[in-house]
Length: 368
Image 1: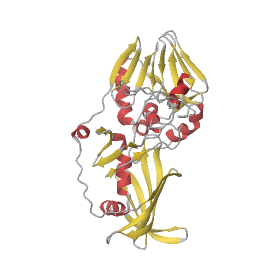
Image 2: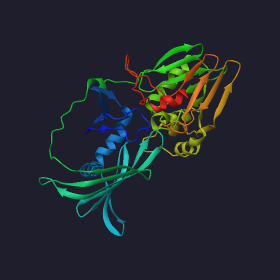
Image 3: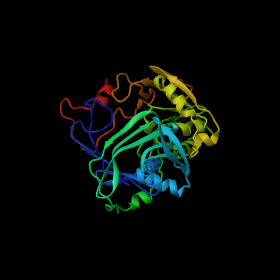
Image 4: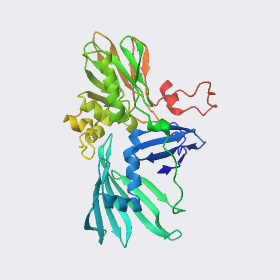
């Protein structure tokens, strides 16, 4: 499956790194058990997207029926809005569970549950309506989806081309990709943990380690934990500091909880993360589920200090951030090192300075 996506900033002061006025192309692919994005011409492997994209492919009206057939779906009946419908319930192993609702020979609804790196699992409801004939092929022209009770998609279909070619190849760079973790010493007892799209920082204290950021998913965070454990043999990772609750930055918190680390996050995130990390992950059991542990969360207000005879680590909320109101940064006063995520990301080498009045508001807030 290929989604050709054009993204444009909806609000001038919105979060993220999308251009203020220009559109940004970001094509999204899934091919078997591989997923990747193409922005700017080069494929970027995205293993954390596989489950979601496989799910989206196989809950399309015809995909859902084929998936039900191959997974020996159980037939039944359910009433929706006073109307009895035929249902087919099945599990796509390690990917999702689904119930397909058929009315008048058409798939009109799919209720599914999918694994998620942050939420453990979440419920998805997709509805299909206003079927039209496209050259002898019936397809819905209205597609709506909600995840966890929140609307996430409202799509109007204008054109359908039956049997259009879909012969894109799996890029070698995606097929051979593996998770790469590097550790660069920044100061005594401080390492920049990189090698992928999202970074972390390891800080050595007298008797334990602190990890700033556990991103993406088990697929990234487990190798990060393994690398950090090599840096100071015998010292456990006691704390994981979460910069904010956006899914890419919170995607490895279930990994951290499974490792027995205490998660430190801004106070506004605490109740949300407690609920998310308490949700079982049974469709495709993750590290937390397999560990049998329960998450421990420490809330931070405006400032929090961790200190021992080795060093002092200061945490501050970035006030008035446009990215999120619960954004934490970390400062090491002895080393004069600031650790932040999404408040500033360097542009490409030799990039021109932003035009007057066009500075990224997240950068301005960080400076302030």
